[in-house]
Image 1 (cartoon, rainbow, N blue to C red):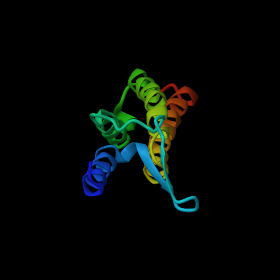
Image 2 (image 1 turned 180 degrees about the horizontal axis):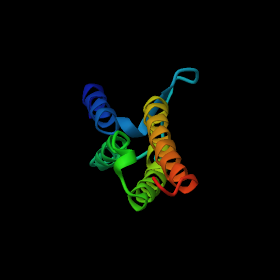
Image 3 (image 1 turned 180 degrees about the vertical axis):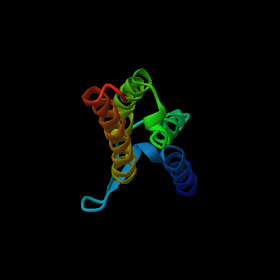
Image 4 (image 1 turned 135 degrees about the horizontal axis):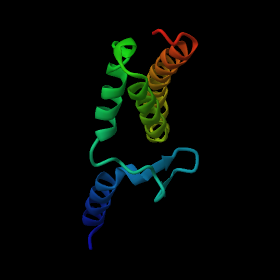
Length: 116
């Protein structure tokens, strides 16, 4: 094989598997991270996230059982969000925790005042 053909094949390989490859600038070498975070085939967690966070507006109108179910959904979604890269993880996790806090606050306020 010619050097040009090898170069083209190497570039194609790097392009196709770029989510598993990182470049070490100090050592000047390519490293392969086969345990890299898998790219989700679907982003279904975003639909779940949107559904949960949209309920905060009507949290006072929801039943206590619905609020407890939302808290459980927050708990299930939290590990998925914690697996994201740093910036999106901070944004989505903060919003999720604020929504969860609102749901817990409404549940506890109903325990304190049973007439609500």
